[in-house]
Image 1 (cartoon, rainbow, N blue to C red):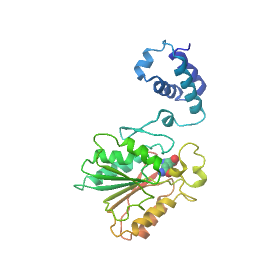
Image 2 (tube, rainbow, N blue to C red):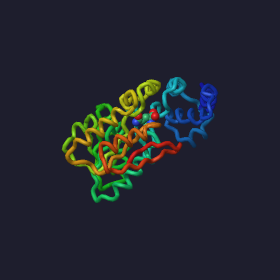
Image 3 (cartoon, rainbow, N blue to C red):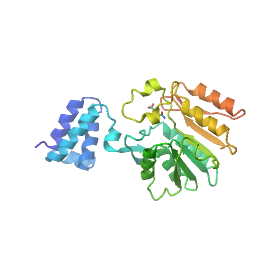
Length: 270
Ligand code: GLN
């Protein structure tokens, strides 16, 4: 029988990257249910056959490129733990910048009504609902599978102010009033998005220049009678000038602020 220590050593030798040891620990913790401290105190303990088999299956999948978050089902976003699987994009830290700005804006309203368009795992919607308890958050997604995950992630006592609607962008809610719209839509150009083998293309592929969904959302907004005061959009590398120009043309006189991510690259329009 292998011990916990020998299983960790063997797997990290195989993965052999700079974070191999911590990645193998995360996976073994997932399989055994032990905390990191427990794991490290029990290096000499035997690993039963079933755990060992499951563990090496996960190591194989990780070695083949599958993200750790899909293997464990967990991703942390804005200090909260979210369940993820291959039906949804893994929330990215840069999206926290959009959320932070939306919280700041939301606080100016007594009861902000916020749409999260293309909600995916629900990370944005749940975080907003939690940090703006007086708000009403409407999470929209075209994917039934994603909405199921988002609902699961919203099953927290502090998140009763969210509702979920299956909708292609704002298509299903033409007459609802929104103060703020947040959207992390697919924006990766098709040619690049194909190289991501694990996350859903529906959440990534934004067409030839990556801007299809962003364009469609802005068009939908411009044809609404009741226009939201705020639109926050995440976009991809090099897309800031195009996004700004679509916004300027569609909403003359509106002001667009561009926020940068940690790299720093232009990432969010407000
Ligand atoms: N930031 C993600 C990536 O680069 C894409 C997310 C998106 O298309 N909304 O993979």
